[in-house]
Length: 327
Image (cartoon, rainbow, N blue to C red; front, top):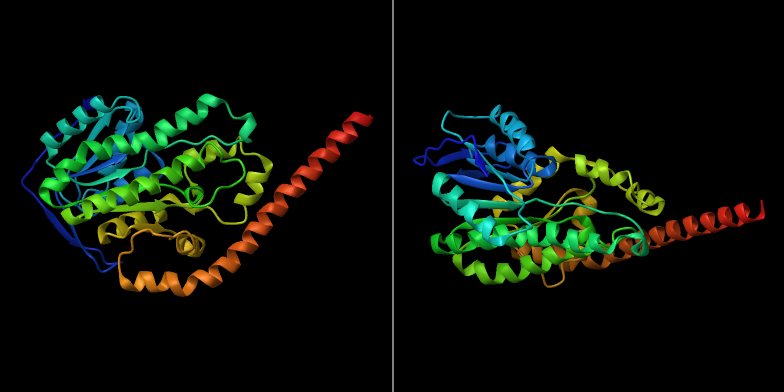
């Protein structure tokens, strides 16, 4: 469903980012799924602050309208537009394709699509409802497939475009409690690698972002049901601010970087899990070759620490259960 929009299709904006030194070129339409809150909202704000037209895509109309008003405070000129689309990107491909096509008719072709719609369920494998596995795969994976499928043909025809898949560090490393969540985020990398090989000759570039734990409403909700083991493992690294994560993702996407990571832990994980993933430059490839060995040693210490946390929690639980039985 569309609501509250206006459009002007005659402007392309060129701005220079003082922090990165990059010349940023924005034109008619940057689309952000999951754009009503969290990282998605911050990405929309970051792009809007640099002159972009924004299409916000999410399910909740009230949140979309509230976010629209918040984003518009950062306008840099009177021609900018925030278009809102209320749709579930994980349910019906034809519906997603139709509404995104209508958005392009109103604001012009998509320059960048950011797939940020996602959800999480934590718990032990045997405790998670079976339908939760299906729901997470639909939202986190198909919710990125459908919008990307809807815009890719136009990007290839125009010989330009960016598609961003927001994965997670849990999409690089499987952790206790994330048996339903991690596979959906791992799947995004496989999609991104295959798609990048298809579209690179058309000057279309894919970015996979691996944000760490980030202070968002979704993270707060997830933390309410995390197993103790998952909480203790998460506490070994700090929680990032959504604004910081958004700045990194936007910068990497504009530069055409395939991997986008935040902080030293994120950089190490990206090196360790690089495998056969594309590289943006020879320098990046050399860094992976040089750093892989030492980072693997550090990573083994991390894994040993995580295993120790799991064992301690198991022993404490068994001890508590045993004490309860004797009472």
